[in-house]
Length: 329
Image (cartoon, rainbow, N blue to C red; front, side):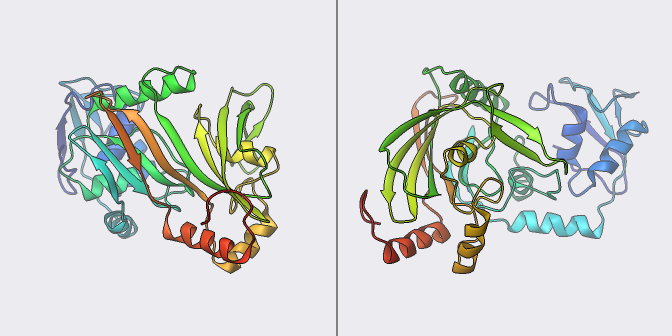
């Protein structure tokens, strides 16, 4: 893929990997470090052309199109962002010619935008400039760590999207089995619990997105298994049968067992106490995923170990509280 020039026009020939993409999305990928507002401005002013013609930002590109991009200069602030992207540590869990799986750290969004200067996908593109195609196959919340899938081919991406859609619809054929480790407040009593509560997105007055349980919401199904229990906390494994926004967090909060460290739906007073004790993040980690390979078909079993901050907090809990369920931590 061509590098956008700072002092000259760039001509980008659209190939199979870019076929069907919106022009604004491709430009945001190509124009690293350029403010989003400026990218939209050059399209609307006609400086960006497709086959010599002006286009709307929503225009979808076709294989064989010639995309003209005017000279673009990266400012000092954006250069700092690029440097940060290159430094972000993203351990590789699995990789082949079609698929990349990384262990996402907490505190980093999966992509830039909405106040985030960059995310995992932008960092990967900076760190792997030779890669012709890198696209997120799914999402994790900013404060959630763990397994994140990235397609290295469009065919891989489409197959993964279809697999995740089938899982959300309740199909059992060729779906991904996603498991999370989550520490909640309180004493969870049931060894196994299926939670089927519909979820509805809404906006706060500030414009921030939230989710709540509501009859008119979309169907959501989580399976919780009790792994360990202490006096004040319980360690659960959460299995996603659907993939709604904030699903695990909202289901648990609604049941009176919010995720430890959750700044949206959690016990805020307890979170402040735990932060002083050293836990400065949400205790939710995408630890395991089992799925058929999107192209080869064989089964993939992916695992990401609990991060040191979470493992250390569990050890501290186990040292000071009596455990009455599960294997000793």
